[in-house]
Length: 154
Image 1 (cartoon, helix red, strand yellow):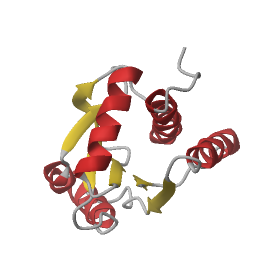
Image 2: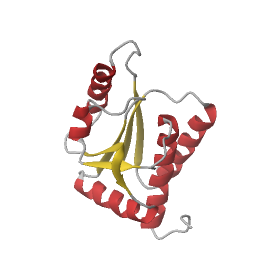
Image 3: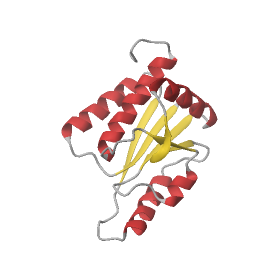
């Protein structure tokens, strides 16, 4: 099983880098984890053009047949137990690869959203994209622990 997080931009805050690395390490017990960062578009570009460029970079990281999940504020929210069930299903449907798409500060392009097999909302609150990445990795780890019937999620 392969889990890929394709994200626009780099994490600059050390504590977030360390946290993401820790959860990627913990996840490696359950699956192959890959975090792929693509460059953000220059702020001088119009917003839609920048999103389109970022979307092309993200979509280039999605393998054919993979199940793509867009992190989107308008996506479906779910609790950790429901997320565990969804992740298991996504892994089965995606030929054992699930790719999470995290856009830049202006969100995901229309093309990236159209490619997504599902849209997921991590929270009704606004999160930085770096924090969303850490939260996603932690929730994926929690999901695998729940699916394995191991203690962690309470």
